[in-house]
Image 1 (tube, rainbow, N blue to C red):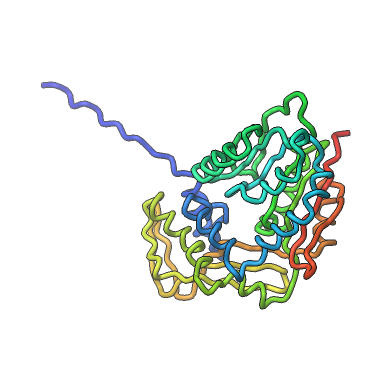
Image 2: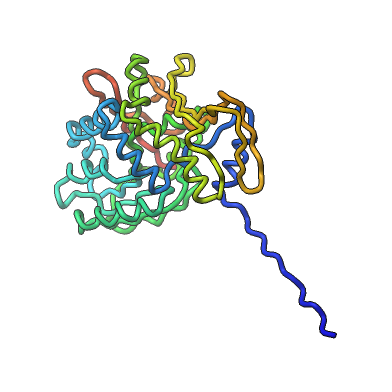
Length: 325
């Protein structure tokens, strides 16, 4: 009698998204890293947010970059290599490229983003518009240690670009850690950072609770992504977008609030929610100019010029990254 063939079982390791989501939902209070907003759909929704009338940061930063482009280009210097952290749609960096004469234009551009599909499409469009520019997309989590390609011969200083006040999405200790990482990567060069400023809470509330509901869709897309990629069973109608300004911590907090008692299943795990319980999905810290400059010094940078709009809604900072001693 032939022997029965042994059955083999293949174990599929959970993705980083699955691990972080389940770990975050197991905590009290529940929270999820905001980097998981940015799949292709989330990145497209964020681009839509940037065009909303209530959302002042993008248009204000763009205006500062356009008006101050010659001064910024002078800090960047000729034939630079630009490294953009969290590159997204690659819109703002074009203002930097256009600020240079052809012979002094940046030679290489390294956009870093976690959303590979969105990044590659934007990089292709950039190559078509700037054929002399070497564009090398890097699909990675820019908050983690990185190894960048060696700078080639004839290339100027390495300059980081971190627009959009994304620095505000970090917890304070995470912001310091990222800035320290950037200072090491950019030694001998510099960094250009967009920073949202402390202001009237009513303006902040409107920016994160837009009338068209695009920010709500962006927030809820996190659950939609979990359903699609992880086989979760979130009922999107059972969660609501909630964003408010916390003046003591000088930050917007964004949450997804359970509208009823419910159970969600992810990867064989059950998560019970009570009515009114929230998943904390994002913070957006606001800074004073002096407060951000102090953070930069702690991270190892030497603060340089700061540019703001007339209403002081937003600021763009140039930071020198001293060479290693």
